[in-house]
Image 1 (cartoon, helix red, strand yellow):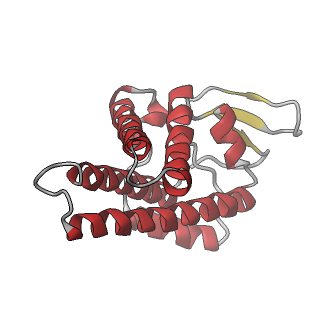
Image 2 (cartoon, one colour; image 1 turned 180 degrees about the vertical axis):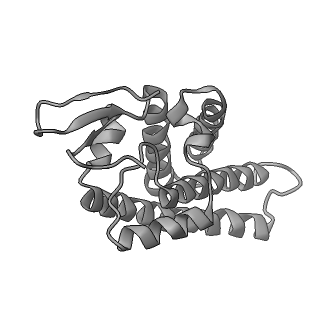
Length: 190
């Protein structure tokens, strides 16, 4: 269960532990792997492949942690539901400012999208190293197209974090660094 205690910085605010160290390490590790492989590593290099395998390993650890980890890390804390995401968007634009301890329903969909994209990039990247698929055009195109989708998704993710930080008054980047959300006084938890 999330622990909560008063904060000293904001009158009436309370801090709630939401993301454990492993969740945060995997989040930032995947972000770094995507950045390095997309911007710095040559796509034909061993480094590119190694970073891809590291990203897949991080993803596998996160999937395991979503089964056995603490409550806020589990799949049940942020189930993927397009209907819930639509309801959340409607409520949010209608003035609802409740706080979600884990991901809100729109954020949950983005998390699953990002994870599936990383998995698909890893699978197609591995396929390109096999005799059966080496040099096969559609596999290379799929790898590149999914990576382009991942970059769009990351940009939308960052924009969503910025919007939700503004909308909720909770610094989500800080929460993903220190693992705690600072809930302003009077905010209801969804």
